[in-house]
Length: 193
Image (tube, rainbow, N blue to C red; front, side, top):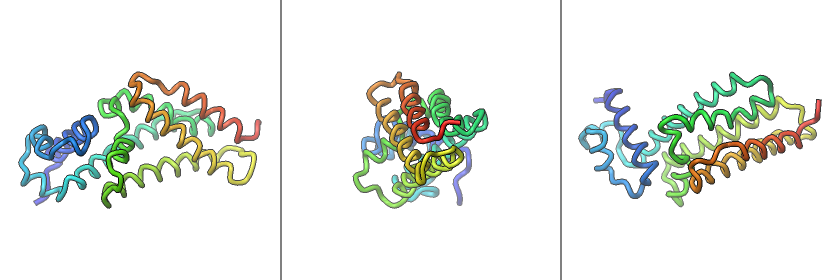
C-alpha cells in the first residue's frame, strides 16, 4: 500500500525541517516520525531507510528550487540576465520557509564523507543541474574564446557555492557581493556588444 500524498508531504516537511536544521546524523528517525505524527510502519511503506528519506527530501527541495529559478529566468530581460537570474532566484527562494535555512545540499554533502547511493545520486543531480543550466545560459552569450562558456559556468558555480557556504557564517548575508563577482566574471568572458 502506497503512502497517501498528504501523509508523504507531512513526512517530507518534517524530514526537511529536522535534517536540514539539526543535521542528518543528529536527528533520529523517531524525531521525524514524531514531528510528522506518523508511525514507523507508514514511513517504511514509502522509504526503506533514513537515507532514502533524506534523498526524497532533497529531491523535493531540488524541484522547488528549480521552479523558483525558472521564474527568475522567465523574468530576465536578456541572455546576460538569464545567466545571472540564479541570484534573483536565490533571493526569492531565501524568502520561503525552506529557503531560510542553510543550503541542504551543501549540508548533506558535508555530513556524508561517502554518501550512500540514493543520497549521492541526488547530490550529483543538484550539482549537474546547476552546472548544466549555468552552462546553457552562458552558451547564449557571445563568449570571447572556445570553451569559455563551460569555464564561466564552473566559475559561477564556485561563486554560488561560496555564497551559500558564507550564509552559514552570516545568515543575513545577501547575494549582492556574489552577484558583483559573477557579473565581473561574465563581463570578462564575453565580447562587448
